[in-house]
Image (cartoon, rainbow, N blue to C red; front, side, top):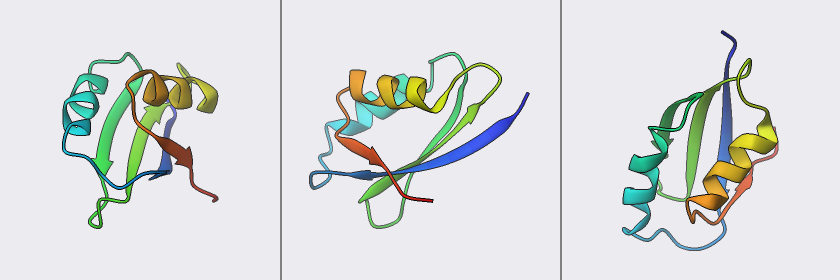
Amino acid sequence: MTKVEVRYVFTKPFEEAWLGAIERLHGVYGLQALTLNAGLDGLSVQYDASRLKPADVDRQLHRAGLPVLRAAA
């Protein structure tokens, strides 16, 4: 297992309704942790890189309805 952490920024102001989407993402195979940052303007995602590619993570977040962009490293 290769654990990777990627940071995302929200493209809109945070909405409380996104909490349910974030909670449901915890059940996606290969996603290990999703953490809102303190300012509620972004999200950190830990995932298993042996199971998912960065584009797969992006797709899961967008499919869940989260307006995010991967932050520059």
